[in-house]
Length: 226
Image 1: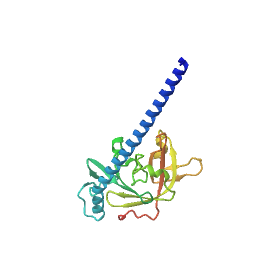
Image 2 (image 1 turned 90 degrees about the horizontal axis):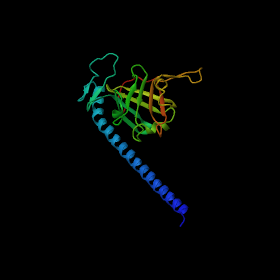
Image 3 (image 1 turned 135 degrees about the horizontal axis):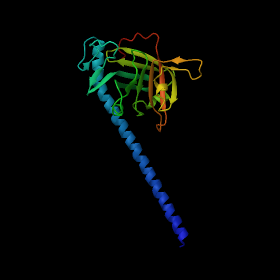
Image 4 (image 1 turned 90 degrees about the vertical axis):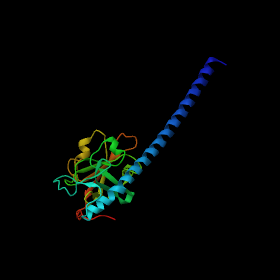
């Protein structure tokens, strides 16, 4: 057998091995993402079992078993409930996607592994931005949410603030101002305001999906959805 044929066979064998390694690595990544998503789902579900009774008690004016700032009268600051060492401003609910998740008061990458987090702003000033991981049971489905879909924010003191989706945008990761600014005027003429933004990474992490929501004009901001 000529040396050329030997080299070709060796090269072919190397390519096959590399292909098998790539397939194995992809399978491991898929399994890890599934495991991590399930872990996050269980973590959020566990928080809800503790957060929900406190919010209901606050809505009924009874106070709750958790540590809440709702009754402390902190002017200009969103009420929170402390669970497991983390403060939560309430819950985000998207009925059409069967999403109901706790929302932490502040964000970092460790917190995002548990639940969506407040990225900036406040519902008190109508510029709240909430970020969530691209987990299937967290914020991944918002990339396909329908315009006009209902989004509810249930606050730590039992208010229900109702929004509806006005538009979706794709934003680059470094475009922080574009993410948090509460109006869009890409054509330089018209501007659309919103009061709530939900965002997550798109597949591959090269861009972000931002879902803009406007507050319902008829929303009274009280009561508790069932």
